Length: 193
Image (cartoon, rainbow, N blue to C red; front, side, top):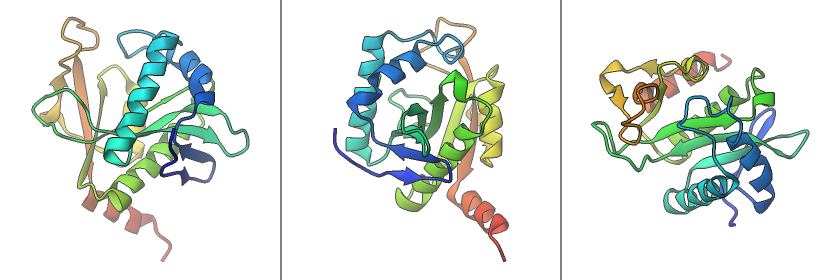
C-alpha cells in the first residue's frame, strides 16, 4: 500500500494502513463493546475489506481514515479521519469525521486528539469548508468527542441512515458540524498571545 499523508500529534501518529494492521484491526472490529452502535461486529474478512475500502478512499480523495498508533508503542490502537459517505441523504455530498478505538484505549483522549489533527488536515490541507459527524443518539461517548472538537449540534441535519432502515435502535442519527471559519476562530482563541 502506498505512503500518503502522515500526521503526528503530541502522542499519536496518524498514518496509512499496512498489512501488519490486519490482525489488530480485525480484533477491534470484532469487539462487541467497540461495535455497540453499529449493526454488528465484523468478521476478519469484512475487516480486511473495510481496510481496503479505506485505502481506496485515500487514493481517490487524498484523505481518509488514518490508522492511529501511539508514539511510544508503534501498533494500531484505532483509526480516525475523514470520509466521504457513499450513501445519499438530504445533506450529501459531505465530508464526515469519524473514529474508532480499541476498548483498552478509551478514556485517554486519543479519539479527540486524533480527530482534532484530522480536522486540521481537512481545513488546512484539504481545503474543506465544512466537516460533519454523526452517530446514533445513544452514543454519548462519540457525541462528547464531537463537542470537545468544537462541533455544534445541527438538528436540522439529523437523518434516518439509509443503510439501517430495519434497525430501530440504530436508524436515527444525530449530526454535528464545524465550518472552516469556526475552526479558525477556535484556533485563534487558544493561540498564545
